[in-house]
Image 1: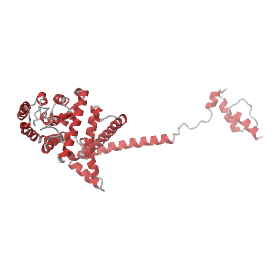
Image 2 (image 1 turned 180 degrees about the vertical axis):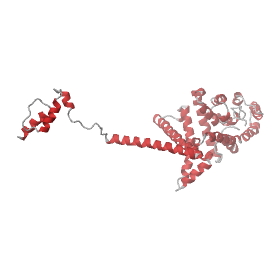
Image 3 (image 1 turned 30 degrees about the vertical axis):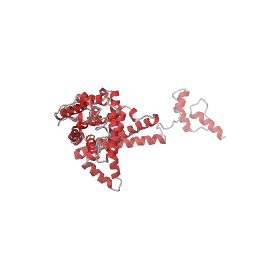
Length: 372
């Protein structure tokens, strides 16, 4: 009986053509009369009248987490922007240091990731350092020097509360403790000038030793070439490429070969290369050999790439590494000087690398714009 009531009530509710039974309530009859006034209903209209779920989508837990993270990141950027504007208005000098430090961290981290990719590629494909491209070789060389400098700060900051002392030291001695990523543009120019002035102090000592060993050269013709070269440099004349290459035999064995250099000359050459001279003679010789070999490998890779492919900043950095203070010299003059250096370097054999080491002084001392 109850089932028959339901069966009679359902057609009445959906506006069916069936005749309502006696158990249809007045409310359902009213509902039917309200639906039927529009005439016969199609199937699609009937389906559209079915009760629908809420139109609001319920995201999955994973989507909720993503939207929450996006919201937090957006709010963090807004707060960070307000904080930067506050520092810029109220503490302008500190704001410059703060932004420089934060950008330096980002650049150092980017360099670390790039160095890791290069090393991974070398390991996976069994590639040696000298087989890399010029930019990859230069990146690894510079990153090793930077990370060595940062490693010292990491050791100092290990004791409890020592990090506060490290920040103070970094503020007071940025040139000695920080790498170039953390220098302001003005500091970069000033510090490079200071470093070049320090290495230039060793130039007279190196040239003086070259004059002293002239009598020790067995070949008379080589003695004459060495005398002419030293005289030109002392008079302020920039030597020609053939003037330097004519002496390559002197630098392959006694008295100017890499294994025959005395300790005081190696210390002077270390200062000229911005390397520490405060090491035993054996370590000084090994480090100078390694450093000169790396530069020679870089020169070969650069000659293969072509100087014209380098940016202005890459050209100036390459010149500065090889002894030229390129911060105050025009880009075209830097490219010309770098071309002269490559002609000499690519003409030398491994046994003649002592000449490349001395070339840091011979080729850069009297170049246009360097006598400051």
